[in-house]
Length: 157
Image (cartoon, rainbow, N blue to C red; front, side, top):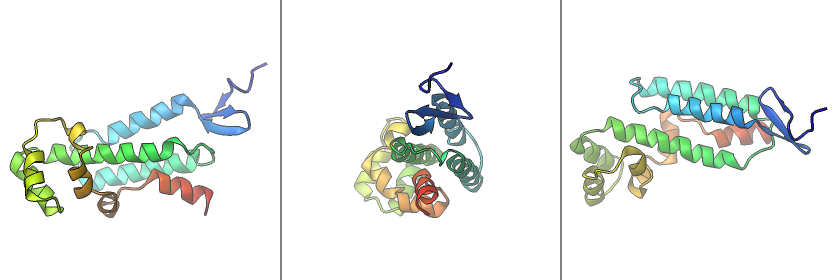
């Protein structure tokens, strides 16, 4: 006889009366998002956003019946940070980085200091200037879907 603490079925695990994601399914989700937001994946942004939308909506619809909400806002933040990292990688040259940040509303001095930085793309993606330039509203207008919105729509439609 298998206890309910060890039971896993079709990507779900059961904790008491709650249905949660299996840790392996969660790891697979994060691995696939890493592939779709890889810095060296040379595809157009429209194609990248389309593939992300397909995967996030599919995953959200399948695992939406889970009552486990706690990691979803953190996953959304992590996905947006990876997208910002991809933009910074694409704006490889200093001039390009400064010009694009200024075009998106960052002041000249902040854009220059960020453009001249030797820090890595992932670390720079967390800076306030990049988050203001590539804000959530702008990313949504580009075509990025929110896992949190998918979850809320599934549970409270």
